[in-house]
Image (cartoon, rainbow, N blue to C red; front, side):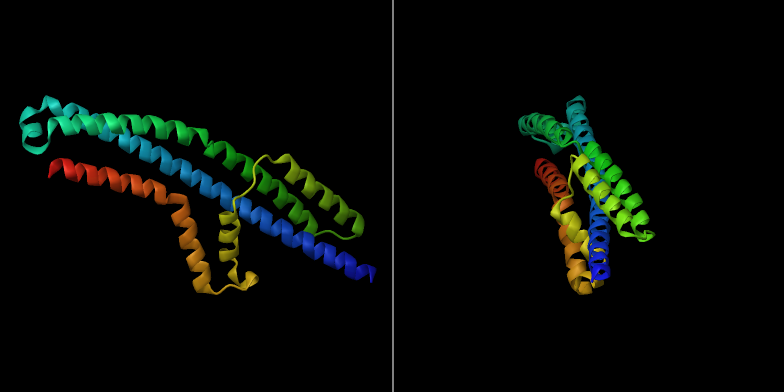
Length: 196
């Protein structure tokens, strides 16, 4: 019976560590990508405003294509929007959170390797304590969508079908990045409206 308890403890810890490290690596990648998307979006919008701001220096082009008052209003509104967006996005600290989660996942991964090669209850207890210490020392946690993405990557282990796994991947993508695409679409529609 003692051997079964050890095997159950070992299996439970192994699964927890595997899921946690995988989810945190996913969170790291998602946050890094969100930072990149955010940076590109703010850069694009800034470039957009600069280009439209210099258009008045080309009167023949402006008078034919754009309503001057409407263009000024849109540029001013977008300038405020970029300022607000920059402050909100920088406040999310994507890179700092990503780095913390990456370090945590690496530490768990190191203990996971030790666990896979461990023999004996004493080492199992030490690894369990170290695992809980690592979790307590990390100020960040992965989001539920990072866990869902991990489950979709290993769908057979979580009794999911491949279509369920693909739906989860689409859902994670949409939740993570749709905001940036909507803003780009709105800016393109505004540009189209200004021209037409």
